[in-house]
Image 1 (cartoon, rainbow, N blue to C red):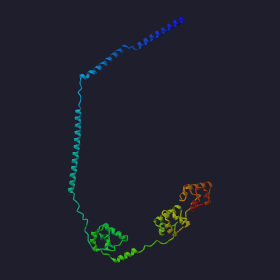
Image 2 (tube, rainbow, N blue to C red):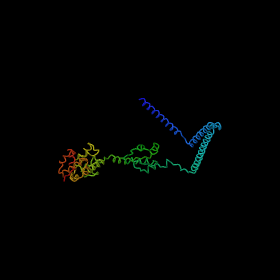
Image 3 (tube, rainbow, N blue to C red):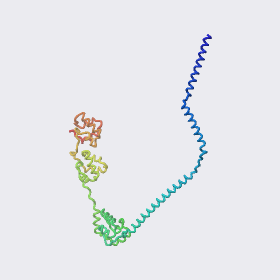
Image 4 (cartoon, rainbow, N blue to C red):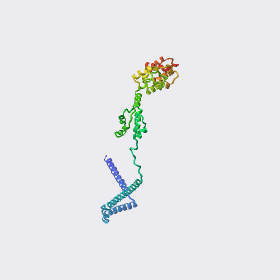
Length: 341
């Protein structure tokens, strides 16, 4: 047993010695340098030392003078003066140009010959005149300005009459001084004044009590009816063109702007020729044609078209009552405008 222990101890010692020997050779191999490498290392160390020595001794050998910045400030001041000088030169050039143009303008003005003074009052002659019959040229000769003469003629054209000389003084544009100057020359012819008044007081003729056909009368004929003006006449013709004609006088209520009072005034003088109503042929018309009527929407027109396509020819209006899109009221309104031929 003891021999075995001794043999194990010897083996352990020998193993440790072997490892130490191996590590020793590895350490030597790691720090081994060739001759050239050793020379390079020595040269590098020498250069480092020389550089350090120079960096420490150079400030003592070559002292550097501190700059106070005065030279830089001097250059800045010189640059500023040059800028000021340039601005002064530019201002001087502008001033010279301005003075040159001023002299040119003065020269032109001195050579300019002004127009002779305009006599605003002008030359005129005073003579007796009747403001109710005088024309514009006579008013101008009296010293009345053209636009005032035009106002006088417009006033007379609208039926105005100067009954007294004081009425003429109320014309817009005639000053009290001018009226005072013209008043002695104003002559009012009373005989012609009475004739003029009788014309003005004559009642205007009323429109004739005529009966018009809503499906054939043009705007001129419609305007002969009391209560139908140009706007209503155009509205009636437009409604007739869009629907195909009137089938009831009650449809006048649908004209844009038609009031209940005006409808009652127009209604007795209107008639309807049903033979002139243009109808839509349901069995051959397209969706667009059906939809062109104001009483049919696009969906209603399409429903009628699809019903005809599925069921075949439509014989009467009652067949359309099966469509959900058409209410009984819609059917009553559209019935006079549909043809089932």
